[in-house]
Every structure is written in C-alpha cells, then in structure tokens.
Amino acid sequence: MRSRRLLAGEITASSGRLAPGSSWSACSSFSTQSTRRPLAAAQKIVDKSIKDVQSYFAGQTALALVNGLSMAIGMYFLGVPGALAIGVVNFVGAYIPYIGAFFGGGFAVLMARGDGRFGMAVTAFVIVIFAQVVLENLLLPKLLGSSLNMSPLVILLVTAFGGMVAGMIGLILAAPVAAIGSDLFRELRTVGFFGELPSDATVA
Image (cartoon, rainbow, N blue to C red; front, top):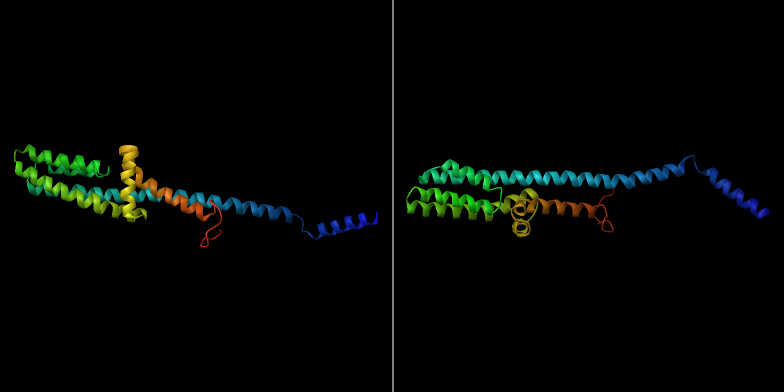
C-alpha cells in the first residue's frame, strides 16, 4: 500500500512540473512543422513548373522569330515571291520541332519553284537546309537547354523520344515536361521523400 502511494506521488509531482498546455504545444509545433515543409515544397514545385513552361515558350518564340525573319529576308533577296508569307509559315512552324521546319522549308522551295526557275528553287533549298541545320540542331537545343537548365544533348534526345512516343504533341511538350519532372525529383529528394535527407539539404 505504501509503495502504491509513493508511485502515485511521483506521478503527481512529475505532472505538476509540466507547464499547462506544454504537451499540446509540443504536439502542435511538431504538426505545424511537419505540414509546413510539404506545403512549401509543393508551392516551390508549382512555381518552378510554371517558370519552366514560361522559359520554354519564351525560348521557342525567340527561335521562331529568328527562323521566320531569316527565311523571309533570305527569300526576299533571292527574289522568291511571297517572302513575307514564307517567313510567317516558318515562324509558326518553329513551335513544332523538326516537323515545322520540314513544312516551312518545303513551302519556301515550292514558292521558289512556282516562279518557274529551277535555279531559284535549288538556291532556296540550300538556304532552307542551312537555316534548319543551324537553328534546329545547334541553336534550338542550346537555347532551350539554357532556359530550362538542362543539357542541350538531353533536350535533343528528349524531344526526339517525345516525338516517337506522342507524335507532334510529344515534340512540343517533351522538353518542358522533362524539365518539370527533373525539378519535381530534385525537390522531393530535398525534402527527404525518397529516404534520408541529402547532406546539403536545409530543413525549413
């Protein structure tokens, strides 16, 4: 009986040393911190995804402008009729990697051939090939790689793979989707979703 009284006294004394509401405050603080980190990570992922899409289409627009202007100016000085229309077609086609260049270049050559001069058509074809090789294979991966913070080679391979899997839609969306996926993986790894936090991660 005496031992039971001593045990009850120790429990009462221990409870008395705890400040009122301290247990609830500790649980509330832990719950808030546990909730705040995923919410902050989710917000960061959404913001970065929006930025990736904006950067991608800004880079595509710049490339399309260069493509359309170069084709229009080249065809104008060559004397091909409808140089402005050729520039517009190539501007719009630049938003569809590879396929757009094919149709835009083909339209330029057909316009040159329609004038009745075979030599003009051949020259237009040379201009188209030069412009598309420089823009599509050199400038496009580098420009988009810089805007999306990805390797130009990765951009090239991802775009080609997206075209094989999903056709025209894959060609257009492959690069931004890959960038968003990369950012998502990086952020989830930072918050420890895949296990332990990396050594360089900071706890919010």
